[in-house]
Image 1 (tube, rainbow, N blue to C red):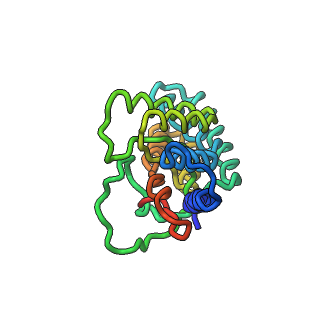
Image 2 (cartoon, rainbow, N blue to C red):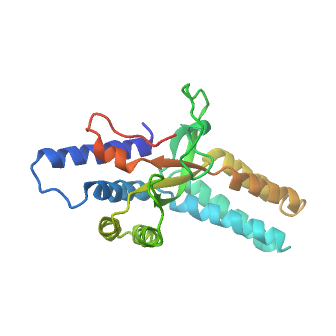
Length: 234
């Protein structure tokens, strides 16, 4: 089972256990589930993968600025970070067409199961976004931004409280890159950075364009039983 699906299953099981134990109900179970599940998924993000992706973006900018020495150092650093990320146990298996090309969850329906090749995806970033059924307002957007800041700082309890008090329903979106293909793209950039900077930049652009997204349906997980965990949508 992919890591994110495991996380969803774990969160749902915990919720069911709490309900059966007779423990007092939280003020907002949906938002509590949101924070708990988002926190678990956020903990599975690859720190080194995120670092590598930032460095390859900076390397592209350095090439554009004509600073090839800096670009070369950044590419080399990104290669090292990707090698470390390869062993950090955060990658999950999915076919590319099971993930979303953009952060929006409104994708064309796929009546048939995916037949694409399973690929290891490295989760490099994650954020809370407003549920698509929620009408955005300045107040809700501000609350969501605050919750994201607390979540990224590791203060999941505070993130949960912000969402509860603000009555904001949100989803957790994870950004991921194909691990092996990204390593190949960065290696290609390292090969050509001196002899053909344009080709090196193209390889880095390919790596940037390969980002895909997975959405954890937090609200659905909070409403289902432990026997029916919610997996990431598409």
